[in-house]
Length: 387
Image 1 (cartoon, rainbow, N blue to C red):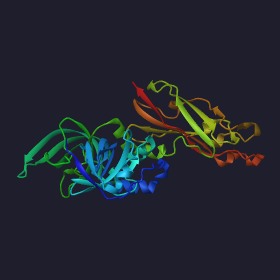
Image 2 (image 1 turned 30 degrees about the vertical axis):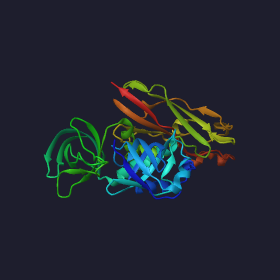
Image 3 (image 1 turned 120 degrees about the vertical axis):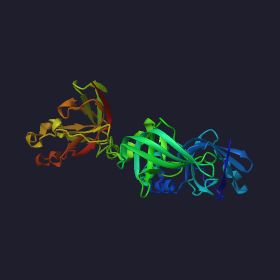
Image 4 (image 1 turned 45 degrees about the horizontal axis):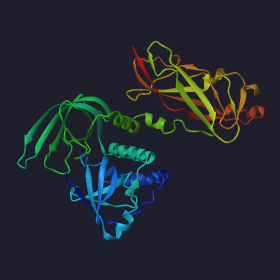
């Protein structure tokens, strides 16, 4: 098995793990954009002067790497003793000499991996892929034509059928041109017939064909988690997910489906709960809650569906008995809602966010109160509708 040598230029390496929230967003964006290779893997001492990284997953860069051998300066040997060989690390590296070698370039180049940090890194890596691509789409490779070159490589034309556009508008059928270099190391991306891929593409100037974004990140076999990451970055779900389930001035909204799979003519019952998530008592207007509920419904193509909205001018006048006080962590349920009364859904899969929108008029100031008002978005719920 091949190894890639990694030259480590830093004389000292900080192994004290910062909490994931201490890696500021601007710093995370910078280190992702400056990295040629980002991997998750275990780190161990190969010998007195070398580290061995066994790669579990490549997040950015050449996909077919499995091991990296790191050369260490003698001054770093004591520092490396602090590495926990039983756990995984996130490594951010720069390439040298056309990916023959790598180097660390930041005190944060090696960080202990955890669920929260990895999630933030994955999202930022996907955002960076999206920014560098002109077109992003899922599709299937129908046929591949190869022409041998004098160097022993192959000029390839892959005929593809579009499944779904995520960025840009590719035609129903399109061609991808690339060079397959089987003797190169690391091995650049190459395609197989009859496989579903997610493509990150560039338009070839003056041609009808497209090229991959770069040698190593232009095509990935379709995976559900990968498609979900793309939808979060490129679709409308992202702007909802960023605030979904968050506490707003002490109030948090929870939504739950009575059934996650229903037939298209059946009722879709949603239960909604409002909770005081603060450590203080909160007073809130609670009459005719249906007038203050909005449903944001997104279909599987990422489109927001039109829904019926309440007529707030028909809400009765404010009265003191329409307010209730919630102690810390106390909650109450709103009346159940039938989503079909707001939007008739056809067969398919949908993401739903429930918004509780209580205008400032319902603070009760005209009757001597100072109750909660604002907009709070529930957690995302998903439903499948069958025939």
